[in-house]
Image (cartoon, rainbow, N blue to C red; front, side, top):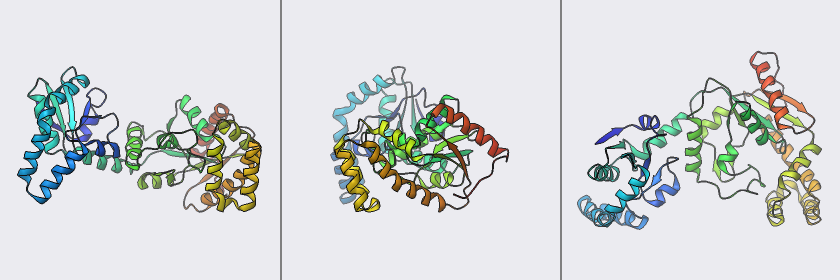
Amino acid sequence: MLQEISISEYLQLNTTVPLVDVRSPGEYEKGHIPGAFSIPLFSNDERAAVGTVYVQQSKEQAIELGYKYVTPKLNWFISESQKLAPNGVIAVHCWRGGMRSRSFAQHLSDNGFSKVYVITGGYKAFRNHALESFKTEANICILGGYTGSGKTHILYALKEQGEQIIDLEGLANHKGSAFGRLGNGSQPTIEQFENNLFWEWKDLDYSKTIWIEDESHRIGQVNIPMNFFENMRSHPVIFLDIALEERAQFLVRDYSAADKAMLKDSILRIKKRLGGLNTKNALEHLERNELYDVATICLLYYDKYYLRGLRNRDHQEVFTLMWDSISPKIISKAIIECYESIRNKKYKAHTV
């Protein structure tokens, strides 16, 4: 039996009903619904060929060519879908909920599947739903601080205490600076980053505090969705003020296993902003494995950069929490207490 459902309705089922994305591999790689399985109706070349015939000849001839490509794969569609849904209940989508998903769904229904959901509007409907959700008002608090303050570690210490978090750098697979790609693999596409962000965002309780690390709009090669970014910038910042020496030592521990060639490349990426002399000194220290000195030189640049960005924000309250050392579990408890004081108007914002 076929049943049309909206993307909102599917999201109520997603933990129990596997989802098949029948778009081409290229479409899937650019961006897909997290957790969806790719069983493409057409290969990339086949999809291009069908599209060309549709434009240059006719819809009927395009359909005929599509059937030619699909017919040899019919048994494969069934076997792959059965692996995902041995109980015979499955959901299917294409780009707009059109012929591709409906044909695939009908084929499953005709061959033993008891219930096949077809998502109306397809992947396009999902994208609209995801991007619209980033406008949702939520009780956000931004965790700020100079580079090397251990903010990501503190974020997860907050999670261990039962707090809600969004790890943007984890989703982006990048630490957000010229050194951010060290120790990480490739980044998702911008579209997939947005999809993955939504997948975490949708399950949060917006009435309770959501902790997010302070970030620029761009994290490596991906962008934070503008509505989400503007939402972040309208909420208070708890700014960790930790001594440069302590942060430099923390960075040495964090990057000590990094490849020296990649560290050199990262230094050269900020050469213009560091200045010729600082760049020269940093590279010389790197050659001698004096990582603390490298970190100190780079932090002088990043501190100025971060502070300038913080001062340029409008209508965002900043609350400073000074700390002697980077102790995520201890700091996370202090941050929660600080935020409670802020909410009870016992803690005053200041200008940095």
